[in-house]
Image (cartoon, rainbow, N blue to C red; front, top):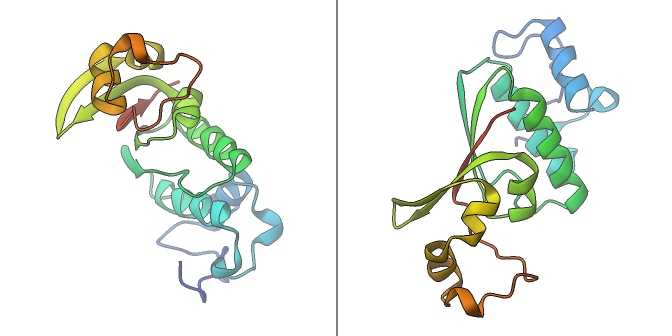
Amino acid sequence: MDGDLHVKPIRNAHAGVNGGRVEEILRTIGMEPKAYRKAGTLAHGEKQWLEIRMVMAQDPELLLIDEPVAGMTPRDSERTGELLMAMSPRHTILVIEHDMMFVRQIAAKVTVLDNGQILCEGSVQEVQNDPRVIEVYLGQDREEYAPDREPTGVADAKEVRP
């Protein structure tokens, strides 16, 4: 994000969004106290939330989000999930993510891709237990998979639905 861009535009007009909508967006992401700070001074998670909400302010039917929690703390990842879930009743949100804790928080349906082809679709539980997914992502047979070990890289794409 540009270091000179402010969280809340001075004249309450950003990309055609009216002032009331800007206030709603800031409230949704918990940024009202930082409304007049430069976006470049925000923490990593706050910048991500601001970027997501800037896109959402344009009211898209579909939002594609690539690894929204990369580099975030566990708490910021959780808050990002809460933000996406709050937006999901009004928007279709497709998230590409490898963080399975995050995927569990928001996923209604998980689609696993392998070399651009759909390998498996289903609930998080179904996908994590699928022998093909285990083989492709963990490189081992189902019997060797330790159920207490958290697999990563399982979900390449998923759809958020309430």
